[in-house]
Image (tube, rainbow, N blue to C red; front, side, top):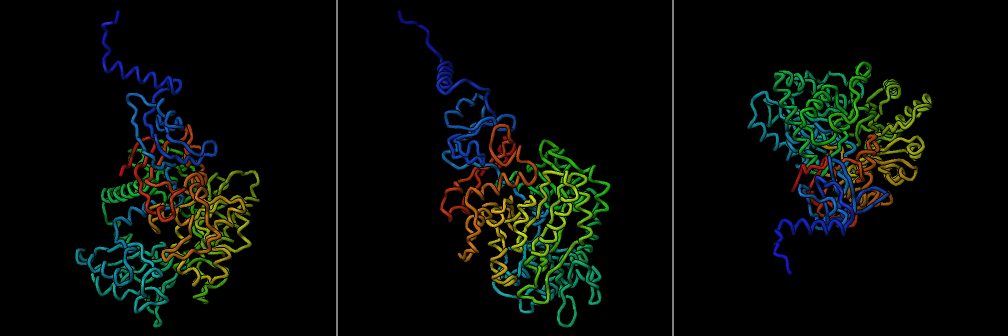
Length: 573
């Protein structure tokens, strides 16, 4: 006799799920979030690809097929159907300036201007809206990237005359894209007390015209002469105003990185005051990104504070401080990179050494004795050689110290004799792929073809020595967006279509690793991030295109669809 019992829809759904689970394998505890039906690049040699990721408690619990993922889906599981889209570990930015990115978002965007006249027009418009005495700030100009030189240029650089004309009552300070030079107007120089008799400080240059008058351009440590006047102005704010401004800057930077699929950021040099701010923000859960911070303070201040400020994965994996930053030289664009031989286009100069070797040796000893990583900005071949010499001497003096992972930041222009030393010493080359294609138009002018071919942005030569290369953007020097950087690594193609020494390209997989797991390794974090594997933090980016297989012209067109940090969707397009 047929049963009269009629099953409810809910019973039918539960039964169906049970049959599905039985077919797919034993039930497991449901995940909080499941990504499925995608193309997942894990950057994990044990399982290079998958179709989905299961996440629980902010960490990855499984990777596998669509069928595998179904076993992790419960009633409360959030499911994202990738619909064939590409997922990978969230980008690791190995060298940027976090607060600088926030500040650049709030200043005049000078990189948009095609020439000096365009920048002057921006300043003129800002001056119309500014109160008398209010500082006008901008960032991102680069004289080598304009379509024409200023009429009154000195050594290719602009002068203060036009700025002074359009903003006579407002001090103007415009920062070079590299961060190693500024151009200011007469009002700013007057507030700073700079005259033709002002001596140039060591490690800097006050550019002057033929009559001996300051042009308004200040290089490296000379910039501090005017920046002090700006600092004095800013010091007039109340403590509450200062904290509000800094918090707004940090929150702006946080949003910018997250929107570009970047969750881990190495902040390449801040003082103790900024680290105090980061701790407040992290404690209040106002930091989405994970910051790995380099301390940039004089040795005298470091001595009594290293123990106080050292922290690893504090505030739920959002703040680590275990490295020290030093700057050995300036930048190639401003001709302040320290070279072994004179600049091809300025034979009277070999650039600038911006920290004494005695200070470098003192810092190295302090770092190695206190278990701190040392990260040194070195762009020119002389700067790189001197840095490697200091590192090697410290390593030999402390043979018991292992796994130091000391870094050279940029390592842009190397002597052939020094390239093998990176691999031999275990020194990480923290480089920026985008610098290669961005700088290429003037590299030959600065170095000449022989030196450029020998050691300019030689990723392949460095990797062949066994060196680890971690990639970044040096933002706000370059845009935060990692996709142009990835494109530069795999193509070395300039905007005009030329390829800059193509034999030094990375493969797609090498570039992916440089922008994820290598960056994590460079900050001692490869066990918790940088690749997708069970137990690691669920930091993931979903892109509209598979950048490991897409045609070259599609790489930079890929869009960030989701950024996931600790298993939570923190950005969605």
